[in-house]
Length: 344
Image (cartoon, rainbow, N blue to C red; front, side):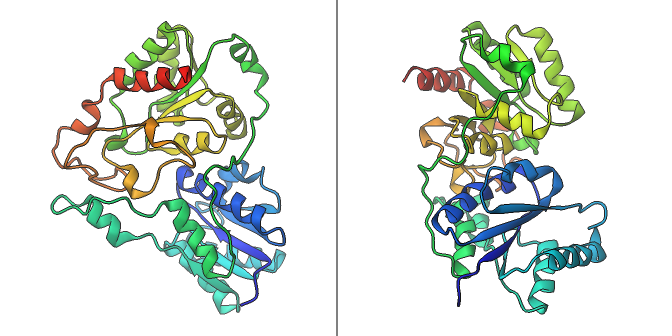
């Protein structure tokens, strides 16, 4: 098979999953200078790919003109009209992406799809007789799909993806204070992945009392309202949620000294800029393959409990019913990881 020159990459879904594709594409493009890529994804995610050479972005409006069977066919016609693709790589492997791939396959374009390793993940997360082993990372699973279509490359985990970006003017005085800047993202898509919110607020207070500046990250009005209150209650804590564009938030993240996050999107966003992440894991587990790009295992905070993990994404009820995996992690455990890393 001749090496494809122009590849369409399909990846819809959540921000963290989409962000995890970026290091893979960066490695592929750097090692294959004759290849160019078009990414089709949710329109909001375009800033994630703006720093990649020979990578263009096509926005999908899955709740509007690209909704349903007819919408996916419309998306196919738009892509097919404006581009000549040599291969289609489906990094999502759900009904919508299968359908879009099928339309291209019918038109004669080769395609390959992601193997999510569902059976292995089911064995890792089941309540009884777990097979507790570290699985192939999602970055490597993504890379393997490109190899199926004849693109040779390897993943270099030491490779930085993006450099620091320009800080928005409104925050420049915060960064010029001379203090270390810690990002804190206290929310996650599912409650089972969240560190208890009251304990996280205590941790933020500890950090500011130790003369660190804390920037608070979240999404949506409810989260922003909570973080606005934290900003009022805690000196040297600043809420950035809902006040900047997504592109500006990425710039802010790129200048952090550390990020505190659960197994959530902010871990993956910080990883794109080589920002060390103190990641807190409860219902989920790094063994499922979702740790941040290039992140050190020494920065993972978790408890060794036989019930963990109880799900891949944190979308299932706690096996024990008491959320011990998160409640048992003290604020001091996370705090010490921060201080230790900054003093090294």
